[in-house]
Amino acid sequence: MRIRRNNRFGQDEFHYFLDPKSVPGIRAVISATRTDFHAVRFSSYTFGDMLFVNQRLASLNLWQRVWLRLRYKYARGLGRVLGTF
Image (cartoon, rainbow, N blue to C red; front, side, top):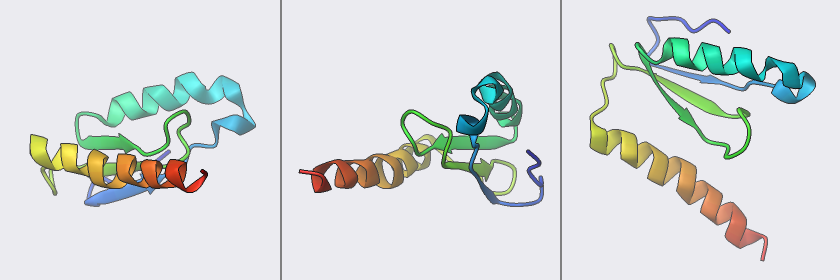
């Protein structure tokens, strides 16, 4: 995966289900980006939908990081779960 460092945001999907042995490599890529990017994993059990926010160009305080998760990750997930009943 290649994330351009001059972008404010990046979105990626890791298709680990094609090769489950790639999970350690995916985790290594995510860990390597943590110094410059704030990573938000939207899917609970997979790496299928991830958002990377460039901290140098769009610095997020603690409240903004919490809001990203509450509003876009958990609210969407709760809506999907409640929609299945």
